[in-house]
Image (spheres, chains in turn green, red):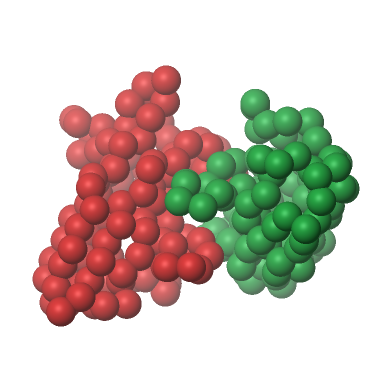
Length: 106
Length: 123
């Protein structure tokens, strides 16, 4: 199963609302996770089964979608949110990742 | 506190073998999958495979099958990733990560990650 994220990169300002899309090459129900990775650090789990917020993750992060189309939304960007975001399908092996979306400061 | 601590950076020559480790603590090691993820310099995340320490059930990404071997030593709560013959293209950061087990299904996510092991392969 291939995952395609869009956009590949995005410039935004603190306080903006941003949405990242992840499209699967076939239906994956809601078996999708989202991760945040900052430079030089390991990825961090944000959301699983498409819309469940991992414990400790700020509520400005939200996920939605089912089937083939999914979104990660950050309601009001904070300085610490500038990072690269990855989706991952977990419905079948290999549990592939999207190519990533780099979120940069405008 | 859940922790995954990986072995240190390695510099190897093409053709050499290597085994890196990932030691889990703060949880029941045998009840969670351990996955391995590659990140080549400046690139994205690649799912390499996953192993269940309870019974050593292992699933490999076909792209890596035959190139790597995953294993565990339950007695010391440690998972391993090994190569028998490294190539320059194996130069990358390698992460281990924990995944909660789901009955009858693949795990749903990686919730804890190691700090990464940087492998450099160069003649």
